[in-house]
Length: 277
Image 1 (cartoon, rainbow, N blue to C red):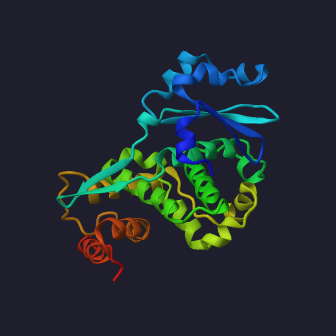
Image 2: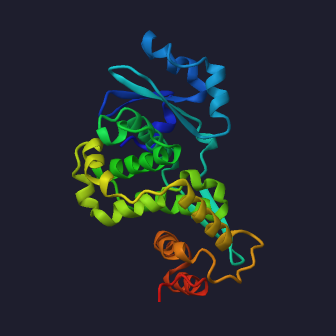
Image 3: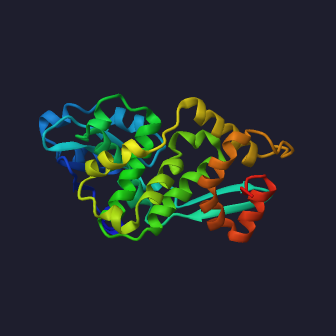
């Protein structure tokens, strides 16, 4: 895996992928970086001004390219990549420090390119929703960490990051990969996950087994998240969205235990009638 120091020091980098390679561009050197592309690839991208406008205040963005040797370009603006996330509930502020934040952001964006260029029929037979693209990109991130011998703590960091983001604001539900990542991490040991030599091989095996959620189900999760973590919400409806509470507890419990400690997390879940007892 590319080191954080090298990633921050390089104006551009070529990163090998299963299907070709991706060009990683730092936004201050975008013109010079894009000049590394062959003409038929560069022509598929809009001008610099449009690319930067599309990136906006985000820290990174992936742009796929239809080319036999190049999967796409990733734009990086490290200054806009957060190193700390926080959320407040039950009158307390909880924070998560994000290690290797730029590196992790890059691998998520490379995940989008891997999904777009995937040869797996499971990903090409039907159009993917935006939500599917996001959690698949995080699965690519987690697989990359395992496949390259990184520790599982970074995978769980990504998991906690996605949960903490929706605790803070349910608008982050579009990137809430935790309900899918928990299935992956429960299905395979870290060593088994790293033994998949190719992302498509992992997709072919796990994709048919995953419980996926439709928009109405995600909306129910959003309502329950707002009820549980929304500021100013009066928690006096212990049966509110009761049919989603067990699923929700399974997904958020690891993050609550990481941030609050196991005893306090279980007490909080019990207070919200989500302990499963």
